[in-house]
Length: 486
Length: 95
Image (cartoon, rainbow over all chains, first blue to last red; front, side):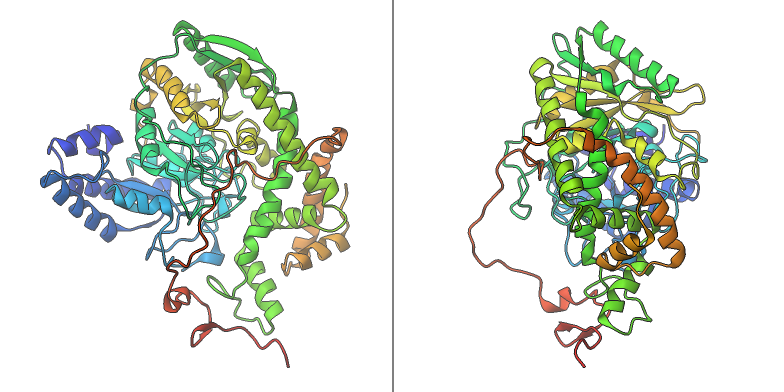
């Protein structure tokens, strides 16, 4: 067994026992990146010097008996959407190429304070708009389980790096499924916390009412430990929640006996891959064996979620991305003569096709004469979608479903068909519209060896409940021990 | 609904995107397809429904209106494509 095969908590235990140093673990991670990243292409850039300096500082703390946290010294990767002081941050876009943030995102500061060496920045769909990493302006990442396929998106680089064991864990962000879907496609655990649970300060904005950062790890317990570090009220994020932060590991092993798990019938629809359905149905039977009760529930407005999302998210994006105008940071078109040209040519040259498409759609939905019919109506339907969940959670403790309707698809397969790409998110995006926490946990493989994910959705701020339910399944099926054929 | 080429050009102007003729054509087709797909929302009766503008489930956080440290000019300007003393520089706006 290699050092990089350890989970975050296994490594933390060895660091605590003095069996291994953070510098050794960080060097193992850097070596693994050198070995496999030419095939996986998860990293946009590696910060070897910064990671090793942080690792040595961690070793000093461990030696003196004063670790900064239980995860002190565990190397981590970051989606390239988190601002890192002094380390280039691009959000996968040409328009931010060369941008070196003058400050850290709150979550980056929290990770540094907890002593985790940050190994580098991970590839993503441009401004997190995509489900396959193919809209990255730089290159697509590859799925470690089959490098001809996508690792999902938009946090595809993060998922691929964790699955390929290049890092022990990573942070991603989830606006419509961007943590959970790539987790499902790569045999990893992805947790999208309740909206407001984790600070968005210093996280490059896509759709501000939907975006939420969260952990991407190999195991449920690692996700709980990482969430513990980043879940914190933050005065610099006006939407940050004041709700108390529980001990996410306390009830992890409590099991599911007596719990009611809702099975939303709208999440088992035509178009789902039969092998995905079979794996998820088998996981549901496992929960019954473990003592949970399955309850058939209906979320009747599910079929409107995709349309609602594809009006609200682009509308918010078109507003958020107005800041990329060639004036204060990032690219400025060289041939611009007037200020108007600075704006229009910079944006034309700096944004990729999917980003332009969404800016156009959002600008249209917000424009005079169309606002009421499109944007306002979508916000009203969003209320109906939220109310569906509120009603369901009066009956059940959590909802279980597939995370993605299909396993990892071939790179290039859906690039020219935006609508079929958008359909990848049908089971994940209602959760964002309702602001709820959601998690994806590995639940098996197809015959071709592609991972399948089980999604668990919960009540606001019940991340602990989701983790406990996911752990109950993982304890019976340790798929995370399998390593990708690289 | 089908978007016209003129509408696409108008939206591009609003969005400050200088699209190529080829992009104008492509977005006319693709955005029309997306707008067709979202048309289904028109079938719902939402007359009496309040809009959800934000997923914040608790009230927004407030703080005292006091001065706090902010970035010094040299840090704020460090990424500027063009600058002049302590300002961002842009092409002349008024002749």
